Image (cartoon, rainbow, N blue to C red; front, side, top):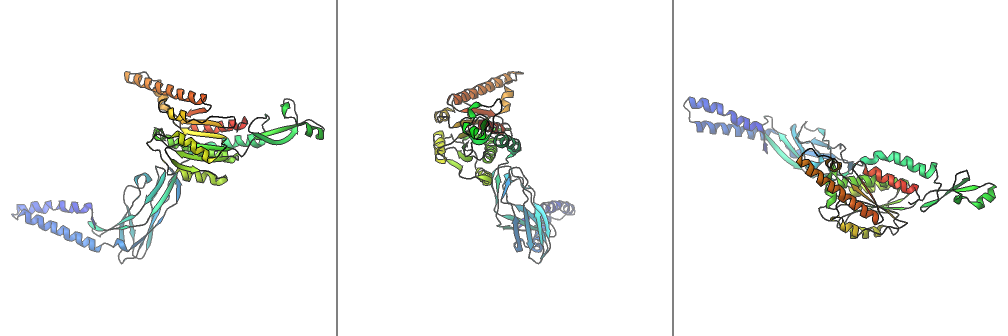
Length: 435
């Protein structure tokens, strides 16, 4: 049972007869008690005449997956098996981050009939969204009170990363096709494989002349090379406390996911093997051995429920876990936020030794607001903020320089620019024959 705001209004209206009868000499407490008793009788009558919500069958239509920020077409169907028409107020029990309507939805279901109502969701957070039940309130004809019932009808949606950086994918795929097919690489170096033979033209590298093929063909023939396929790309996403910091409209972890998805899509098209590791103190997600069109769905499924933890990342354990994925990684991409020398000691101490066959990229998300603060000098407060911003920028450069001395490459950019910059560096490595 429940009561509505109309009951409060009805009780308040009782002030009028209370004043009138008081002027006529009637005892006020007796009048007040009679009025409240009348209201209670009307409430009981309203509840008795309301359709029973327990005679209603509830079913859902819920998609299993959606992307962050996209509308989700969720609907609920009510089938009234009772003898009375149902005047219902419906509340679906989604958590606030699901973006469900805040108000209860009104629906009339005649007896013996079925009605469906749309409840659009707009998720605001990755992970699992769950609604365990639907609450139905059946109003009486007077609107003072009614009956209420809870129906255990579970609905679940997995909210995947938005992958807004996929807008950069067509242009990068075009460049990859140019490297891999339309124009073969004319320099011979590490990380390239034989493509085809063609006639020598002035300006070609004479080291690529195939003398045996030239003797058979009767003209000078040249070997052409293309980026080597079947390489291994390992992506490590830091899910420690530094990944929880907000940058722009999201967190550093969200920007890392975007960069990882764009790079993975590009590497999969290039024929490389992609491995993903999300780590802080333990492995939060791992994807390995998945190829082709199944790669991106596997990555987004693994990424969806993982969020940053307020703990320091164990980098020795993270780089040790890389060795369990593949024994011969060609490219290791570490997506983290190493912007302070004091907090980066464990990261730099565990940094693996780079080699001719392995390239290590460290991608960090930066905040454009820091660079803006460093330029302002309008007031005393702005001067202090500018000094702090300049110190932060200098610390980040110190860490980047330490990464370069250790044999890695540091890439720092804002959340929008980081994914395409890492993808461009991957293509540059392909073009140079290093991958």
